[in-house]
Length: 194
Image (cartoon, rainbow, N blue to C red; front, side):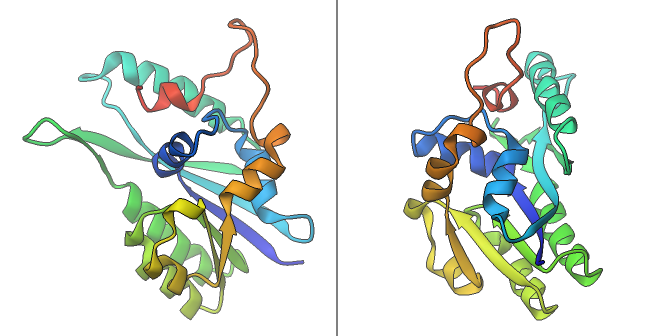
């Protein structure tokens, strides 16, 4: 049975879901199972995001921490965090997220931790890491919406997984039903401060 690791670029997925009019509150375990498929084995999901600095963004950091705490309770998911900084022009930027995700993909491939990497991102910066994973003898599947398939990413990936089809087919599991305010778990809206 083929061993699968799922690597999720969290903020990239969040904005892709919004752009495609999908819910942003995701059950990441069910999402990973949907990406893995029935005939393969999910080994682990790695979810990458950036943390707001509590001294500069206390409200956003507090809301975001609740979301991250819910991810810590997700089966077989490892949370990998970078940080959010503000540049000289006042724009917020993620730091350390892409490098960590790329490094983990290559490191776990080299350690023979998985047979196939399922990469959830639209960011072309991951192309070199995906190529290295393939050079290590592993397969790379790219999970993207049809409106964001870059030629470079398609060329590098062994296979393209259509996120539109996957989330539509598995919507009942991937997108948890709405809950009352008291039961509601933190969602991605809180994590990204929108």
